Image (cartoon, rainbow, N blue to C red; front, side, top):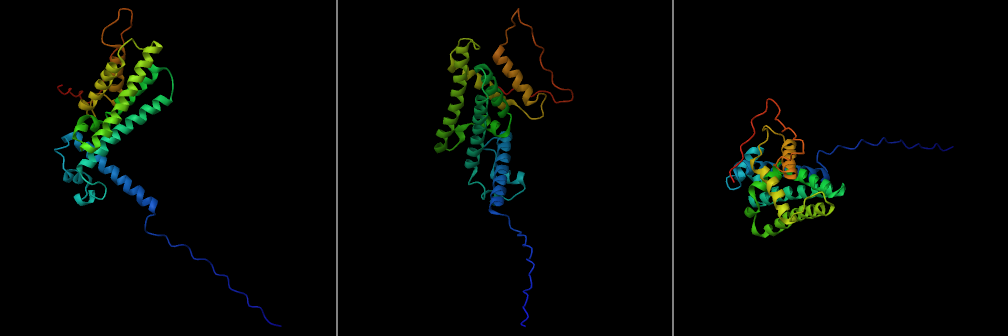
Amino acid sequence: MTAKKTAAKKTPSAPVASPWATTTDREQQREAKRNAVLQAAAQMFNERGFHATSLDDIAARLNVSKPTLYYYVKNKDEILLQCVSKGLTMTLEGIEASRRAGGKAMDQLRACMEVYARIVTMDFGMCLIRVGDEQVPPESRRELRRLKSAIDQEFRRLVAAGVEEGSVAPCDPKMTAFVIAGALSWIGRWYQPGGAYSPEDIAQQCIRTLCEGVLRRPDAAVAPATAPARGRARPPKAAPA
């Protein structure tokens, strides 16, 4: 009788853990580092101004060499373009979210004003206001102005809808939209993080003034002004017009 040979069963080896990141991981890491470059640049543009900030300054803040920056951006003009674009995109996305939330035109208008006021106190939104698109390369200026126009048109539409529904006093929607955007944009000029008023305090007080005006109505109760929390720094002085 022939003995059958039994094949020995081999235990599969455990897969070797690769020390190299996957393509997805590498892309995510690169995008995170690129965003860090843009964030640092926006902060320095806001603090020093665009022309007074060099790539060496941005690299120093990130503790990297200047050549490292070129792996994520082409030059300083591209950095500025991306910072301003991010500020505009954040604003448009916030306004669109407010619109989708529904409600009366005045509710949507207030929500859009809150979005705008909040974003201009953030790095990219502040950069959008303080630097301006006139310093962006000419070939990119048209696209940025198109995005700015979209924000303006949304404010005009909501003002006109508010007039129609009776929640906004009769007015010229174009001029009113200019006043609203101009007043809220100026927050980005004088706001300083860590000041006496939080971004939420600033937004609510500015929006209340824009919506209710400054004249006291005899038949209306006067709401007390919001006082800054104790221990905070004094509010920053407004920059001269």
